[in-house]
Image (cartoon, rainbow, N blue to C red):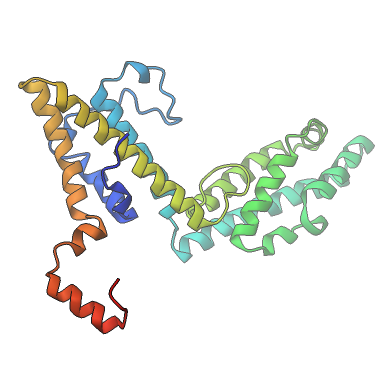
Length: 266
């Protein structure tokens, strides 16, 4: 697959391209039938090529936007308050179960507190946002253990785990971490990977368009592909490679800059 220069497009360039996908020839490409929330639409293999292109471009940008979408401080504080509330409600339920008349319920509650509550109570509510996300996900992971799941069910706390899961995912998403299990790694790494995903998607789409234009005869189909390719070409023009930019500078300017730097000519 050829590389067409999309590695020089910044995150804001890919994000802005969402607008291009809803204008001109791209506006006529409907993806509603194939755009499944889990991105595994059963009809995807039957999708027309332009539909697959639009889906691939939009999905790659959506992953990038998820990393970039860090909410405001006010929103984060609100989500943090909801997370803390879910944790307190869980703690209250465990505490009530510890006073239950049934010894088996009391024993189950003791195990749950020891395994799933920091400091034996609500110590997790004093953590940083990121640490709260990690702690919430560790609780959800612990709940997958069959013994722990049985204990949670016995003390009537399973509903609280669903609330904690929703609050944890909401806080994670607002931080740009995404609603996924496990530690996501450094934001810079995730941003680099998301941009790389856009670069790969756009290079693939562009490559297929070039191949089709090499083989399609004149007519409506060729005109459609040319119209769909046009925004991609414009995107590359907006963000040319550094070497291409430097090549437009007069040679005299380059010589003056070299002298000013103090470097000896090669």
